[in-house]
Every structure is written in C-alpha cells, then in structure tokens.
Image 1 (cartoon, rainbow, N blue to C red):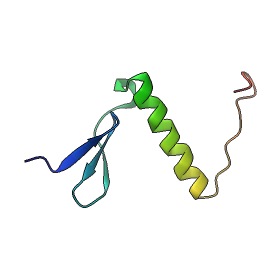
Image 2: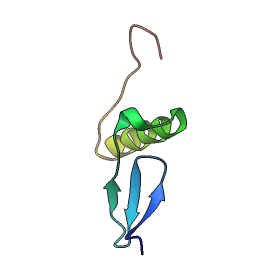
Image 3: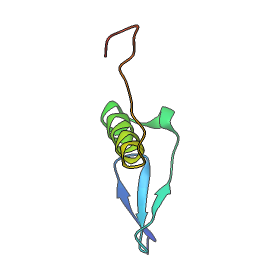
Image 4: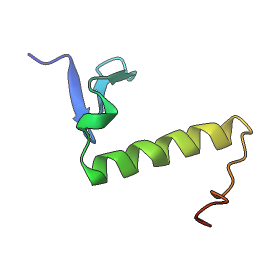
Length: 59
C-alpha cells in the first residue's frame, strides 16, 4: 500500500496531507516543471514575496 498519492511529477501527497518531494527538478517534464514553478510562485506570493520579470528577456 502506498503512503502517498502522486501529484505532478515532483511531489507526492502523504496521507497526512503533507507534500513530499520525490524527485529532482532535472527529471521533470516541461509540464511538470511549469507546475513546480507555479507552486513556488504561489507559495512565495502567500508569504509576501514579489517576483519580477527577467530584465534580459522581458518575461
């Protein structure tokens, strides 16, 4: 019996509700890495961190 449910490609959810890191970012698919970055940005924003665009690319 698994102790976690797979989320995206990097994270799993423990039965306790806690996220568990299960892999390396270099192993993520494009979609998985996009989801990972979205979660980081969302978590940072909840903590009051403001992210800006890359001045070299304008993105």
